[in-house]
Length: 355
Image 1 (tube, rainbow, N blue to C red):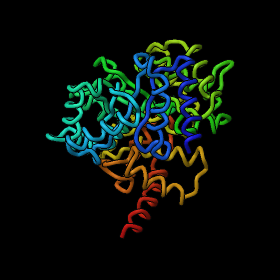
Image 2: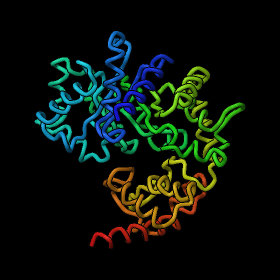
Image 3: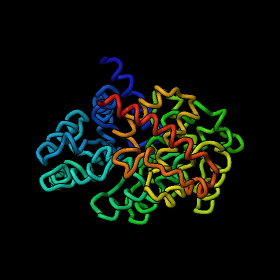
Image 4: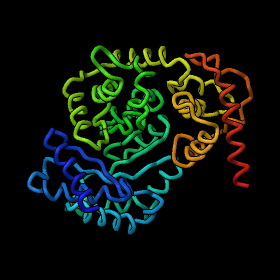
């Protein structure tokens, strides 16, 4: 295992030598070895510490008191071999309830403020999988220096209002999962329309986020030097995008995704039951792209209701009235009702298994 840790630390140093200076880690990543890997690399880069930005994270649930939050920061400092963390994330906010837990008196945020005052961390930031309008609420409260959002070229309309709100507020916006959890490189043939001349869909996806002025940093995981090299080429070759070009990309995706949902959200504005249709349709994209079985979709649906875009939704698929207002509003003319009915059957099976 020591050899493995050192080999991975070599990749971090290689990335730094190539010009990458913003590194993201967390407890539990890489079988809870990620902070240790970065600790080896950062010890070797100690003389250049002022040129490296390191981020790590803590869950509100496991750090529900200020004392626990402080202890978590101290543990990460030790594992990372640094005396200060540049960015510390309130990690994985999937519901406003979790956000309020982090912000409660005597809670995680209060502990992080104490650490900041003591010079143990520079910036308190937040990592979230919330919908765009909920991200706007967090940004408007003004407690964080930056925000980490799950965003890529396929789903960016779903959270774009949150990124724009953060950009207007002058705080950093970091995009995670730029390749849609590996879906884009895995299905390059089906997603070929994303690419321009001389590009692969993977390169197009990375260059899109890097080129968006609203995005400060695009995170890209790597396990080989070749992946680092490709990401650096994308950064060197991409062009800055203006609002017109971003809207053109949005329209191009909408025209070419065919049966896939782009997450534009028009459907939800017309739903009398306030069903988060765009979230359900984004989830359904996995079935279409990966030809998943019902069994796999049910398992994924259960996970999405705990960790993903379907946490604490105001209404479920089964609540659909079949009024078809969503289908009338859909820019892609998707068979939304049919898909919601199928998802409702999967939800029912999850419910029955819990009984």
